[in-house]
Amino acid sequence: MITKLKLDRLAELNAQKDLLKIKKQELVDSALTPEIRSQIAGIDAEFEPQLEAITVKDSELRKEIKAEIIDHGETVKGTKFQAIWVKGRTKWNDEGLMNYLSVHPEIAYLRTIGKPSVSIRKV
Image 1: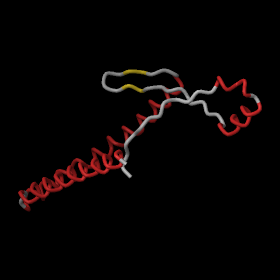
Image 2: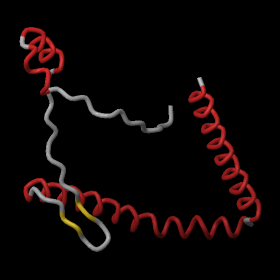
Image 3: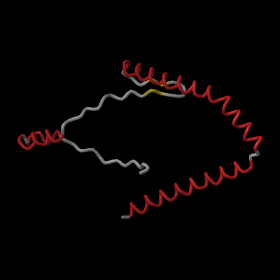
């Protein structure tokens, strides 16, 4: 029950942060005159096509890099980014192996269970 309370507290902190961001943006928006808003809209319109083009190129280049790294089979490190190669995971049918284990208990030493981990995500 303690963990649930802490998770709820974490949610409350996130809500407070979001509320502060909203209040800040409202104050910024109220300080803008119609002329300034118009200028900002014009600037956004001017830069949007360029940003979209870069986003498309970024996506295409990432796909190329990933394909090359898969073929290369090793991590490659650049100045600002690295492409980390991770070998494919081995998966086993745990239910089938547990059935096999019940008939062949001598293989029990081959089975290990890793430590649990936790990631916190929004619900």
